[in-house]
Amino acid sequence: MKGGSISNNLLYAGLDLILMDERCQTRGFVLDGMPSSQEEFDILQRRSIVPFRIIELEASHEEVKFRNEVIIEEKQKLKTQLEMTRLLPKPEGEEEEEDVMEDDDEEEEDESLPKVKLASYLIPLEDDYEATDHEEILEEYYQAYITNIAPIRTTYSQLYRNWMAINARQNRWKIWTDLFNFMTEATFKMQRYMKSIRDDNIAQLDGICITPK
Image 1 (cartoon, helix red, strand yellow):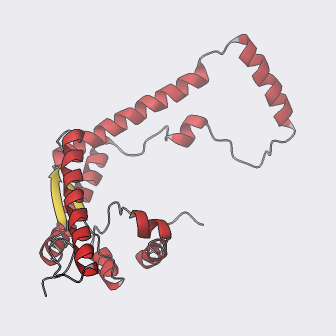
Image 2 (cartoon, helix red, strand yellow):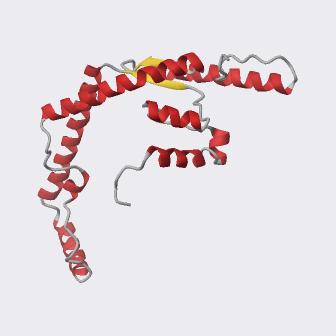
C-alpha cells in the first residue's frame, strides 16, 4: 500500500497459492526472471517448486547496453510526442468542446489535489541521471546477474537437467522455433512417462526433472 517492495517470503507465499489455481494446474505457468538469486532458489526448493524447463537468454553486456539505449530513445520520442500534443493548436470545434467540458468540471475540481501534467505522469520530463549514471547502474546490475545466476544454472543443469541457454541475438523466428522444439520434446517425455505408469510398464525418467539420486 505504501508502494514499497514486498519481501521474498511474502512474494513466494502468494506464488504458492497461485500455483494451486486450476488454470495453472491444467494450462501451466511461466515464471519470468526467477529464480535469479540463491535466496529465491532456496525458497523455491523449500516449497518443492521445480520449473519444468528453464530458458536463459544469453546476451553480452554490449547487447544489453544497446537495447537499453534503444528503449531510452523510444521513451524520449514518446515524451516529445506527448508534449507536442499539448502545444499544438486544436481545431476550433475541439477547442469549444473542450472549453465546455472545462466549465462543467470547474465546480467538481478539488484544489487540494496536485495537478500533474500528462507527459510528466507517464514519463519523467527531467531525468536526474546522466548517461554515465545509467551505464554504471546497468553495469552493476548485469555483473550481479552474471554472478548470481552461475551457481543456479549449475545446480539446475546437474540436478534436474532442465536448463537451456539460447543466444538472444538470434532473430525471433529462430529463437521461437528452438524453444518450441525444446518444450515439445519435454512435453513428449512427460506424456510418455505418464502413459507408461498408467499401463504399468517401465517408465523412462529422462527429462521429467527426476534427480539422479
